[in-house]
Image 1 (cartoon, rainbow, N blue to C red):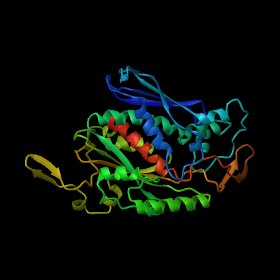
Image 2 (cartoon, rainbow, N blue to C red):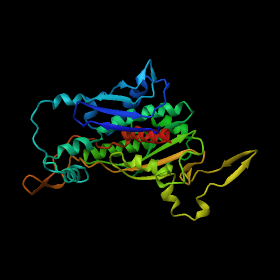
Image 3 (cartoon, one colour):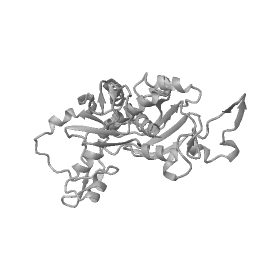
Length: 350
């Protein structure tokens, strides 16, 4: 059976629900495995006030008995504490769409008379459910010696050079600061940039790198476009809110170089085929080649800003400034475990 999942729930609804189907039976699973990743998702400099309200914990509602998976669908629920502030209260219609959000496009698509159904479901609050699913998939991969880690390589114009830092060390160093950058000095500069953008009533984006270690060669396929592993990874990463670009390895840098400078020569060491570089990012022809799989994604500055932007009030057709809806100033550090989670799902499915 193939691995698949669904999430349900709105940003200020009672809870988020996730169902993961296709897990093998007999996988030891404690809810602590999920909660550890939910805590990581909530921590990061530049987070908005919502993170001071929520304290995400998961409840496993099905698919586990005697602390082991049964092979049945795994059901997970995460309560929204902020729901209590909204329950039973009259909420005026939201009619001023924010540029860059799903407010307007969602309303056009589904014919809403109020923008809130679009923004409630499009909210990145939903990623808590995906992190829960990814935590289980990561746990499954760990049984086979596969490790997934991530870190921030840039925020705004501040960039970190991490090539000289061993991969495992990058993962560990990133968790030692609140911007998740493996370089402590650059992390301080990133923090200063976020602080400055908060004072400017604006938002910042950045670039995240996620790496999978220990993958065997042969995952994915060259036979059909939708089975190519980089295609599946790209779709999963771009499906995360505010992600607008993805590359496998240094793909955009490679595009400006001659072909002889961007391949990974194959050598023979005893009876073992080896590589001295990983410019392919661990995937050739849609299939893993045994090297670390490296995924980089560009996260745009999120659409909700304290500084108002021009829009149109759909209730009266009058141009007006946007209304602020509570949000992060720089969600890039918090997005690292989210990207790790969707990558973990794709790799577990493969």
